[in-house]
Image (cartoon, rainbow over all chains, first blue to last red; front, side, top):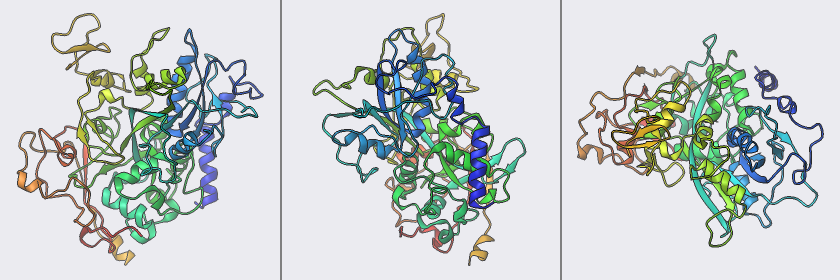
Amino acid sequence: MNRTRLVSAALALAAALGWARAAAAQVCPATPPPCDTGADIVNPVYILAADTQVPALHALGKILRAQASPITIVYIPNGSCTNLANLYASPAKFTAGTAGGPFYVPSSAAFDPTVKTACACALPAGGIAPGMAISIVFPDNVDCPTAPAKPANIGVTSGPVQGMTFVVPYDTATSAGSSQKAITFEEAYLVFGLGPAAASVAPWSDPAFIFGRPASKGTQISIGSNIQVPAAKWKLLADTNHQIDQSSTMAATIAALATDPNAEKALGILGVEIYDKAANRAKMHALAFRAQHQEHAFWPDSSPTAFDKINIRDGHYVLWSYVQYLAPQNAGTGKAANPNAQTIIDLFADNPVTTNPVFEPLDTVIKSGLVPKCAMKVQRASEGGDLMLYDDAAPCGCYFDATVPSGTTSCTSCASTACATGTCRHGYCEAK
Amino acid sequence: MKTSIAVFAMSFAMTLTACTDNTAAPPVADMAMMQSTPDLSTPPGPPADLGCYGMPTTHVQIINACTSAQSFDKTPFYPSLAPGGNLPPLP
């Protein structure tokens, strides 16, 4: 399959899987309203969003629109480093990137959070200041070397964990596609660091079928840190078909190769929460990864078909990073200048928030494919850095296990009875 | 060279558990040979299978801790650019 056909097939598949914007148009006005004064845009929070976090923003945004005091999430999807640069700029920028935007979550109960983008709105002539930004890598100039220095008024909140994965095409229905099951640190280093042709690591030696992201994208930065190939040094073909701007396009590209004769040669990268979508798992496989000095390769989950993220949570799978929330703060408060932005940050970071009606914020995080810190057993202090044990003050591992798709837990329910030992949290008896 | 490399065998073995010993910790002296800070000047391949760690504390112990999760064993494929598993510097 040549490059043109590949892209065409990817786009066709994307449309077939319901990713086209037309799906969102059903609840969106024909003419994009002003992002600041549109009738359906109430209490807006303007977010520079890492594109992998769009599903989570949609899910939370829909709930926030139904609150007694609604909040409207208005976002622009972009790379993590681009988001940092825009937030750190003076004045900060809220401008559309290659993926378009801004988009807002509408009030309609019919809004489908799984659409690729929400409703478009129009920036006013005078521009808008972003209320917060989301990065899926540590917001420093090691991971984003071209970002300006972080202004003193920008606060950073480390939130849930996002996994990343190498993916290969595989059609679950027909068993067609790549036979590959795992990739090692060394193989990934060679393929992406030296280039597929130079590395000659079978079967990933044809650069036409090796796919990455632009160097500003968090997925590539995070994986790059773990395989010791900085994002800017990945040897990919220098075109947008191989340095793919959007996660959804990457997924569609890999999926389109599932029944291609060259499927065995293909290798791409995705955020785990993108991979976890049913439509994607049906057309590709996540590869188990064996880190440097590790004995065995592991998937993010306890098995290729599970969703429990157990290996991310206990440290057997190292390809992960924290979702980082950044916001301008008023001096000395430690809180975002925009209180609604702080509410969104607190909801994602599992900090106490009073809502009406009451809802469980962890559900949004977990069902978006992220892992709240309270379900983690390990932590790290830098991108791709060594793992250390982590003991959350208010663990939620039982609730996490019970909430993921097909989830089960051996923990005791405390919905109606007190815990014999431990502490009742989110309906289950946690260790403390 | 590519042709000869392509015929190198990769051995795969699916295992249902990563460890055969859920309690015994490897000798401290052996694990001291593994660096917690990645260093490409050292052979990057995994150490000999020393079992798993029941009570991990360091990075290397954590990633090699005992688990019931499914794992996959793969012998790395080292092309001529990485003789013996020694990775070359990035260009």
